Amino acid sequence: MNEKELLLIMMEIKRAVQSDTMRTHRGKKEAYPRVLECILQTESPELMLTHKDEILDTLDTIAIDSGKSFYSHIIYYS
Image 1: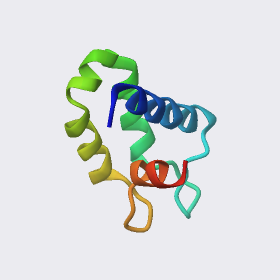
Image 2: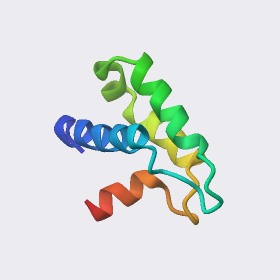
Image 3: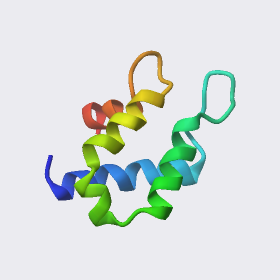
Image 4: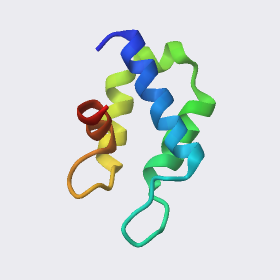
């Protein structure tokens, strides 16, 4: 994955967080968007690119999507 692809993915996830469309089947917000929003607000793009694997692994770990991560969903369906 190159820098441009990662930034596009991060922008797509950030849009989802801002539009408040990511919700669980019960209608409650997931932890995933809150954690991602914190990362996007506190970390520089350079740091995110340097540590992208660790960040994405962490987000995958807390993702709630019937066994699939939202990150994987974006990669395969965009």
